[in-house]
Length: 307
Figure 1 (tube, rainbow, N blue to C red):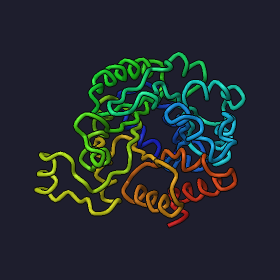
Figure 2: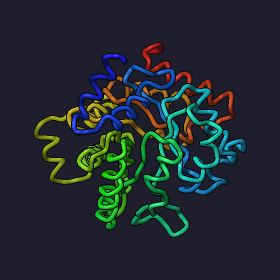
Figure 3: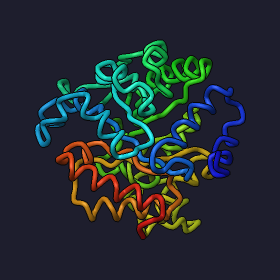
């Protein structure tokens, strides 16, 4: 095992050997194995956004096998999806790619102003399918946030007891937050900190803007000159807010956008000390050959093969 992976595992000293082994499986898998960096393919958008919005841009994506194969062919670290998609291909791809079972999900048929995700799978499902981790979304700022925190606490404790790692999607939304505030630096850092405090091994947040939402926090950022002018500086602050870099923090790829914009974001994540990307629509909504080329460039950037 590479020294960098051993160092990362040392941050989780309270966890049992099973958890550490499954974290190592993610960190050691694929083309970035052993580097301490990771790229994960998440495909929960069919549930979260609907099938046409998710897969019509690249119709092979309607087939669950497509996403397993994409993650394998691109040499990614892991593949994350809800219960149905994993059940549809876990047997055929057993051992080919570490899997993360997304155990809660929500739809947009009832609006999204105060979101909370339904618990749609459990730890037993993750074990049955051979997963290395469970994934759970929280929405700091939502009026239902405390319910989600309590659900996560129970599921995380159960997962850890049987050796599964815990990945937390932490997306501020709802309540008194403005739309701009959902990706504000102070709010994003707060969301990362909350996920860490709730026991996440891997934290997923969105890339932060330089906007500051909270009046009291803004005073502190300005008083102490917390750097936020560049995306690299903002990523560095998110990592610092995640137990001073002692938790794995990865950043969402968001909606499909142009190659150069994504590559610039990846450079900022890498140079700011982030651990990698969790890249969904930007990957699977491209034609297969384009997706592989696109993901290959991102992997090379994290590996330090491309500036």
